[in-house]
Length: 522
Image (tube, rainbow, N blue to C red; front, top):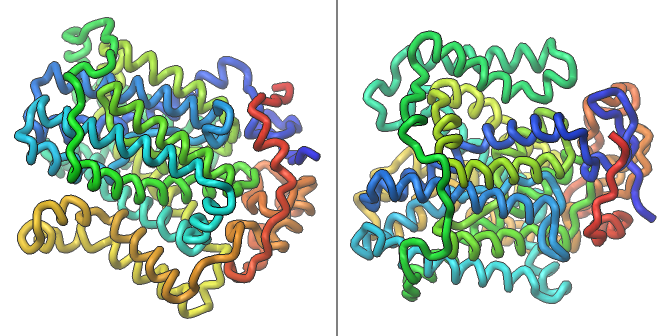
């Protein structure tokens, strides 16, 4: 029997299956555009960094950005809408993974830079995408065995690491953007602080609807102030073309070389851990059970999007943790909001001039909003760790030591640049890579393989949801919509050791297996 989660929507009405709810078109467009703005900087920074390192021309760089946005839109729709057994059908935005930046630059420079380097990169990306897609089709028993490597102590640590590693990215934007001539100027921090304060005030004092679009309003207000003060420049808008269509293999036929392929396969192993953690995290937030089949569908979408990215002149894709933080902040749980965001991204990918308008948001303004969202990503990881008995010394060591490893590249970069082989450095010089690897290895040493369905919610969490009036199967997550009266929703369910948690009944599988949306009336 399908689960019925009775929750209050932001309009004060009861709705069923909020993750499957189709909102009215104006709200759908507004919330979707907010997701685009929230993820835009993270989406375009990868092609900008890689393209600049490979010495591409400005026109080629613009093409990379448009191709990235176009493919992001398609990938996000596949992930959120779902096609058969591909896509998690959760509000997950797909974006280019930061983990691949250093390896792609290393591959590209080894190939001599320029468009010739892109052909080698795309060969590796296509191969890694196909391999990821194939891996996620392993027989159910074999896939569940692999997923036992990722109990809450691992995925919670990885998501926390992602938030912690991303926060400096937001702070760099708040300082004006790395490489800018006025990096660190007080005016940038003033814009960032003002934007952040505006968002926090809306979250604290605003009505539910205003709170749900606080990030969007913060970006608009901050950009408007910057424009009035002469710090938001829209000159590039007039120089941009109206239409820019992405075509397959624009730069030529991909080249397939063994070392770049091996390097990209390792990158995809790390992104699989990221997507696994993001899927469980967003499942908790929206109150929907996530089992091994849901994770497999999410990874299939990752693989398909990555292979498509190589064809359409883009890069490897992963579920974006930034937007998981946005879902957590806004409480807007409908996956169709992400579908709307995907449509916006496709349009932006076809309209360089429209993309130039969004790109005009000043770094300081963007950094203020991004820092808030990245902090919420870390919080999502901490919430997942709430399922773990951290009084157990072995679990505490797994989390603590993994966080230490994750901070090593940012704290001692000279170790990687001067004392390590360039190929090895391109792989290990990443906080996410080191933190995720440490969490997996330490968990195997201390705990061994987790029990099947290790992410099933503790019975106490299920009871808390039951008291809130939700007819929900155990394992559906413990995050309760903020609009539910506090008396009905205890904030801190009793933690049960993750390793001892019983497998969760799969009462929601009927929903998960049904590719057809079952929206409630808005």
